[in-house]
Amino acid sequence: MLNQNLFDDQDRSYQLGFFPVNTNLTSLPFWCNKTFAAIPPSLQEDDDAPLLFSEPVIPKQKEEFTSSFAGSPIFSLQKSTANHWINDCMRNGGNENHGVLPINMKKIKSRKKVREPRFCFKTMSDVDVLDDGYKWRKYGQKIVKNTQHPRSYYRCTQDNCRVKKRVERLQEDSRMVITTYEGRHIHSPSHDEEDSRASSQFKNFFW
DNA sequence: CGCCTTTGACCCGCGC
DNA sequence: GCGCGGGTCAAAGGCG
Image (cartoon, rainbow, N blue to C red; front, side, top):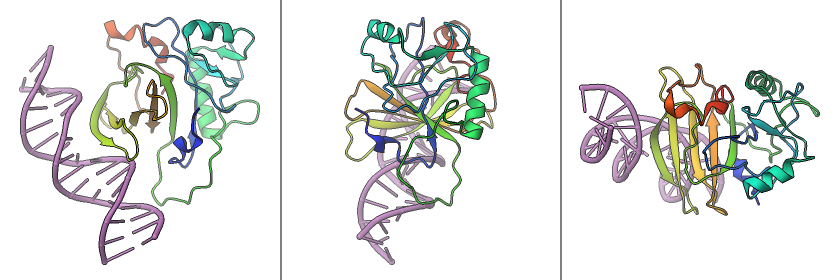
């Protein structure tokens, strides 16, 4: 199971869940180990939208996900709704009933350097870099101590956009990809045609 | 030729 | 002050 310390390097982080519906991606929903994901204020059916988890769901197969889905408070919502809602949550921190709750972390001493907002999530996937609709350029790779998998560093290729992401595999379960985003995009996702079909539901989700 | 990845060097914050 | 480790830089090479 997820080690809470995994997220301890962030002053303030949020974890959101999503599930790629009707795609050829191999990724499955990440494991929520806490009830920190949230219930959106307005729910609307939209199979092409990201899903937000309101309580832990640990599917191992797609079919299993479908069955555990029934009766479980998992909702889909329109992309635009999700976008605004998540933005509000990031700004306001949400509340007990609505919003994205910060991960409960041990106290971290203050840093002088102001960090961009970050959030991370886990996805079960064969590929390291999930198609989130944006174009990324790799600028570094490091072997992190006591881990067997390297950590890769990516930057958004858009001019003046300073968003970065880190990608690494979970030490305890190499099937799981940990993706950490830092900063907010100042532009829309790239609109490369052909290959965007599979990732269309991600668009706007990550700003 | 332009854009990308690779990879060793470098930088810097932190703990001792 | 020093060493360690994570993050970034940038030169070199690959690829379409």
